[in-house]
Length: 330
Image (cartoon, rainbow, N blue to C red; front, side):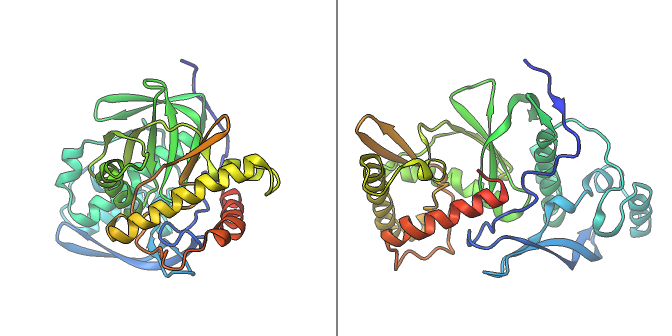
């Protein structure tokens, strides 16, 4: 195994993100008050960094900026005063940004411990957990071990894919599978949980999807079988002129696949998911092309009632690819 080499001052791959709900707006960082229940007392934080989509109104606590769990969950505090003193001694400043960050092992904590936490603290813990893993992976090259409940996944870097809700990696132990880490927000964790729940539904209806190998019941990670082909977002610009055989072949395959999905959504509204070019893989075999669905997680905010494939292919896909490149997804 090659030694993981630390990088210097590398910005997180997910420092800029597309809204996970509407998949259109770019998330803006704002400051807002936030309340957390700790041992029966309400702690009001006057200024916490949050993410907001000004297109659809989505707003959530930014898991990247909350670094509380090592202080909150180690000792037990007799009073809020002691908690505040502990936060100050740990060098937490405004918006709970650490002045210094010590090194620690990458991994996901005990799920029995997560289960014991109250709702607010559980979300903070899970935000910190995935943020810690993603940022740790982003600081290295080569191979990095990640502990998952005593099991080791040796992650190969760099990432092989990224979307609004997660980052995907190869790992050494199983070349036929991939390891996906949720973005540090409750919406993305819920998306991964539901993705695991509905994958079998799509498979039963004949939609090619990657089988789930292992997953976190709280949604911070999932291991899936590797798909063939490449995403439409990656190959779109290389398809050639609209009249070329390859372009027409891939376009026809994507059109048939998406219209089939939309028909399924009409019959089973709860199955509605994204048909973005990042979520459709294309397999080209000689003179044939076929499509696969990458992520089955729900997309309840999407409206396909007036879907027009020509507009999708000629306008929506290029616009989305441009956004993906702007935020570093591809």
